[in-house]
Length: 597
Image (cartoon, rainbow, N blue to C red):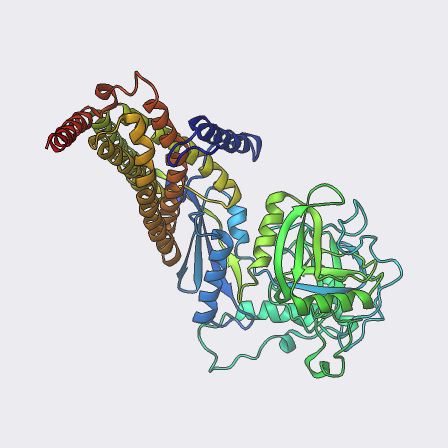
């Protein structure tokens, strides 16, 4: 039979809390790299600053809309829920990214354009230092020909073999650059043909060097003439930076390298030439028509066929149809997964693939797979960027502020403890114990959130926790004052606890609900560090309810059933008990007078 309203089995609630704490700390120590410390924000541990400079194909100044869109996308990539403490700000035509920690390569990789495309492989990949075989089957129109009968042995959607075709893995520094000097062969275009004509009226904000590099690379590596493509493959130096990074034309063939710079590929166009789009509307033999815009979601998962991780891609409805048609038309042909003009993997299609999903396989680490999935999920940047050298930011000022803040918080918390002991005595001790247990839970949650969603604790977050101490203490006060009211009405400590809990519970829930709603609204409309403050405030409010329901109330119930602990002078309810006795005596006298009358 269930206990009466307000009556509980304290041991059951305390056991539940112990199980929660054990589970949290088991996850803390048994997962991750063994570190049991929360991630710290830029102001507490320092960080890395990288400046990204936008570069356009024509060398012109990028538009305000494109820069703002790029800033928003990079902020989503790096900041996720907005609690990692990273900052992305505009400085003219530059984007300045500041991330916690010293991961300079990861910070540079945030400027990756992330333009994904699927291209059919023309011929067979050759080593980066080798002279490519003649590919006479490459059509002048830019459409793809049938590969030779010896494609890479890797299957589509499966991990690459240990040898043979190159293996894909993400890298922050993309590489695949031809020589900036056009070939001397008569079939190669002249530099005058590939360089946009300069006129006196050209805008002063155009960078002719950038424009010439991109146009020269396109004229060679995206030519529609097979002989020019052969020359481009011959000249391509995979060890140099790539001017076509994020600027390749999807309607033309492409000569490029794999992401490790070990193999050269000649790839078919993604889309038919614009003038042939209608006549080749159903041609999936040569054109995949698949880009990153057809992806609805990307996620990193364990490689089911080997070690490491893969990135699973889910296509939108139309994208799934394209992928099914392309794989059906190209069984036993190789398809390259191309990110920013660089081949990530090039599996062979073993059979038609339906269902609207595929994977990018390779020897990814978990972090590499997660970064690639996160980058692809949020879409390509509207601009390509060159990154500066990473700069280290010192946390000295933040640590000084932290020291001052912790001293102030410690003094305030000590005053709360003294007040609770003086005013509530035994109940004050229970308050202190509840606050300590709340801190134990919060610490474990902080460590786990840092691993799962990249949450970093900064000064604003610490301020949120300090404010939350008052909210947590307020819940205890509501309960204890209601308990005093019940004792004043003449009830004993033991009988007053269940009635006080029932009546105070609604007030506690209402107060915490208001605090949580305020934190949620602030989190939605705020930016930067204010987001972190709102997040910690809301999280502490939720954990406050866990502690009050599973710890404070059961401990008070246990104290009320002990003869020693329920002593009015020890429990802090002596004054209320005397008022209750007076109340009972007054009530008894009135009852006697009524009976005598």
